[in-house]
Image (cartoon, rainbow, N blue to C red):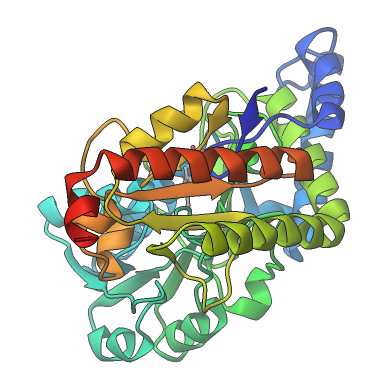
Length: 388
Ligand SMILES: *Cc1c(COP(=O)(O)O)cnc(C)c1O
């Protein structure tokens, strides 16, 4: 048995998205920028894909810039704003729970003389709006807060932040990688100026993403080259992946309501069973709105890495802390920001469910988790101490 519960790290490609790409890997190979007949075919497919995505978001096709990943979109948005608006000010406000694509980009800008204010989150993992308001100053050019967190699934008050940004004439960047295809996103109504997403988190191919840039927002160049993507992302257009992303997003929107309900019920059932059968656990973000498929659970007095490896031996794939830092044994910055002590943060596992998961898989996983936590705790000095 192989069970994939790491859908926040990446997802399996949707069959229809795969089929839509095939012609563009084979006979339709023209450069979408070429004026000849080969280019016209692929150029048309790219334009159609751009329109499909723009329509789903309620924005204009010209406001969509194709990128190579979510990380690249975050870089282009933040560095692009920093370069274009640095004469107006060099202050950026960012939350403490961002993905490395945002976090490390801001750290890098700090070395270039930008001032970065990092916003706290409360114990539920929600950003502090009062702190945001008081952090704003004349030099603030950008606020960056993600829509839904990749580790906990906790959803941020994006509309309120959008209002605050607009009132203060500050640009607002949102990393919507985890929420795209799952939550309602309307950049125009939510006051979002820059929005980032990536196909492989919604059953599209890896290596393609997009950045929405509201008309009127200027971006400095991060990559220089030819004229593709309004000169902001030069390089030969990746037609097959763009076509695959549009198809995957179209499908995610069509299936969204039903899937959110189904996956949400599976997740709730999973958490209910785990809560009843295993003592001394904490479900992170349980009291606030979360993505339907994400379950972040702290198992006190055991090591997350041991749980992860034991589950893997039973065929179950999960993540401990942040997927992107799982090769380092550092406690997750997201969990620490929520005030979870480091020793408990280390015992946290993220189960992320997706559209291919079944009730049978969840039942098998529940039994495996109960057995593994029981065994690991019997060997844990901390657990034995706690129980004395
Ligand atoms: C996965 C992820 C990214 C990075 O996307 P890539 O396409 O893998 O670069 C950025 N932000 C969040 C919240 C993510 O979960």
